[in-house]
Each structure stands twice: as structure tokens, then as C-alpha cells.
Image 1 (cartoon, rainbow, N blue to C red):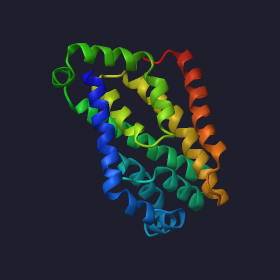
Image 2: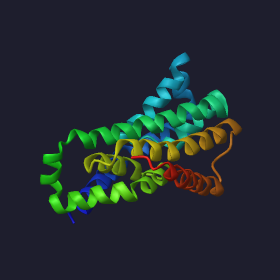
Image 3: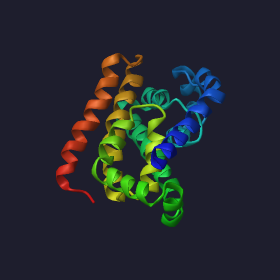
Image 4: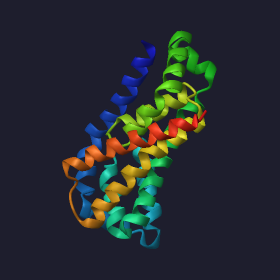
Length: 207
């Protein structure tokens, strides 16, 4: 029960940030606005994009728009690489925040029973959740922090994070490079490919 409350509280915090400041950010970060903002960073636009995507942990950054802007500026290849890197950095930061809470404190926060349930859940099915969440709003931040809190094996987390971040990053970079808005099938693609990649990665038995 405490694990569920923790996850709800994290998600509510992210949602609250969107409700307070998200409207202004969305107005500023249309595709054209995001491209203009990144161009202001000059030759470091790719780094600014990665920074924005990583900051999604705390700020209401429209990640898919930033990814598309990177594709618009750098093309599908380099733009997709920067977009995937930004998503990876954001996920790793979230995991790190969770790990900063020591195990003793995490057990006190969740209770021993829920801590062990969470550890088992993320050790077994956490990869699917982490991989699929990269295409969704709110969930990536909450899941990454929770994965760190319950000590999901780091190698498994990184592989799952890559399985979600790479296809999503390259997909939206391609959309930006093509100058198109994301069609419905693109969202489906950004869920199906991470699932397929994680299914293949599980065969390696990453621990």
C-alpha cells in the first residue's frame, strides 16, 4: 500500500508541476519555439536539447517536442542520438534520486513488506514498465525514481531504459526532420518497439 501511495505522490507531483507551469512551457515549446530556443545555444544546441530532456524530471518540458526539434536541426541520425541520450540521462537522474534515499530510509518510508514487494516487482517486471514508459507522460519520472528507491538492478534498468529511449528518440527526431506532426501510429510504434527490444534483451538475463 505504501509503495502505491509513493508512486501516486510522485505522479501527482509531476502532474502538479504541469498544471502550474505546463501551459506556459507548451506555448513556448511548440516545434518552432523549441527549434528557436535550441538555435539560441549555437553549436551547443544538441547539448541544450539533452539538458532540457534531462530536466523533464523537474520541469514540465514537452519531451517529444524537444526530440522533434533536435531532429529538425540535426536530422534523424544525430538528432535521434541526442534525443535518446537526453531521455537516457533523464531516466538515470531519476534512478539516482531514488538511490540517494538509503535502503534503511526507503524501508522506513515504504515499510519492509512493501519495500520487498517493490524490489521483487521491479526485478521481475520492472524492465517492461521502464521501457514502455519512455513514450508516455508523467510515468517515466515516477517509475525511474521508484526503480532506484527499491534497488532495481542497475544493469537491468539501463538496458530497459535504452530499449525505451532509443526508438522513441529516433522516431520523434525523424518526425521533426520530416517536418510533420506525430500521427497516431507513431505513438503506437513508440510503444511496440520498446516492448520488442526489451523482450529480446531479456534473453541476455541482465542482472
